Each structure stands twice: as C-alpha cells, then as structure tokens.
Amino acid sequence: MSQILTVTGKRFDLFESDADMIDPRDISHSLAHLCRFNGHTRDFYSVAQHSCIVADLVPDEHKLAALLHDATEAYLGDMTRPLKQWIRAYQDFEDLVWWRVCERFDIAPELPDCVHKADMIALATERRDLMPADPTTWDCLFGIEPMAETIRPWSAIEARLTFHQRLMDQLAIGHRRKAA
Image (cartoon, rainbow, N blue to C red; front, top):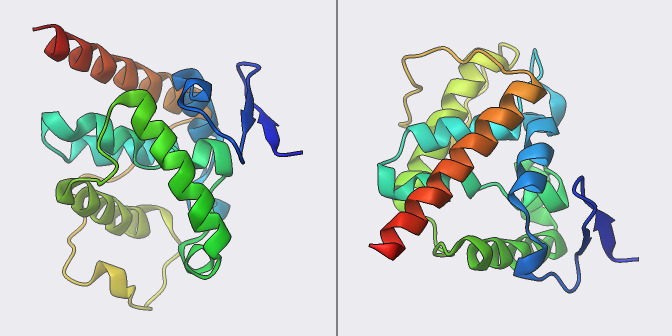
C-alpha cells in the first residue's frame, strides 16, 4: 500500500502523488501535531509554529514559501537532519512531494535565500529556548544569531488555527495579486 489517509479523508499516494491531493487543511492539521526535533524539546513545539516563525522573518513576498517550506512533513513525517542526509530514498520522496506542493500553491521549487536564512535563525532560537542545555557546537548555526524574542510554544490547537489562518491569508493575497 502506498497511500496514507489524511485528516480530511483524502488518500494521498506517496508513489503517485498529485497536486490535487494537497489540501491546506491537511497540512495545517498535520504540521500542528508534529513536534520538532523528533519530540526532544522540553515542551511540545510544532512544525506549524516553526513555519509561522520562519514566515515572520521574511519579506511579505516570500511568506507563503516560508509557511510551506516544511509542508512535505505533513505527508512524510519529520526525520532528523542527520538521518535524512543518509537516506536517499526519503530525499527522493521529499523532493517529489515538494514539487506537488509547489504546483498546488504556485510557488517556485527553489526556496529564496531569505527563507533558508530565516529557517536557520529559527533553529538557533529553538535551540536556545526549547532544547536541553548542551555545550556542543552545531556547525550549521555558525554565524547565525537567534531572535531577540523568546519562543513560547503553542498548543497543537493554537498552532493549527494560527498556521491555517496565515496560510489562507497568503493564498488570498496571492489570488488578489494574480487578479490585479
């Protein structure tokens, strides 16, 4: 079986995914229930909240891409970065689903540099605010300063509602731009 059943009742086929299978409600719900860092944060902290933080750090024209930069995880789950780098098949599935997300929401597959930078700033802040104290240097964060604000983790419900509203707002803005 190559399908998963989503919260909206859709059957998402991992081997033959289609952009029409991508539903903003499924993404909002799933990312709000997925904990970052494989659950190894002091308190529950969702991928949806992380995505909202990343979107807050980029210019307006890149907010939709920033909100959706981890959307593949709604269909594939989250995998720790070290393991993801070793499992080529996962990367292939992630790329395939990412292309479908981009097609569905009409965004460029190549994320803007500002989204990558914002993702790293969010990571540095998450490490400071949400992870156990550890003196080890994370090489990927060399030269990256965390945000001044402290992250207060949201509940899954707050994360789902906030992420979904921001996603709908960005889609409406994009629709208005195209109609203008």
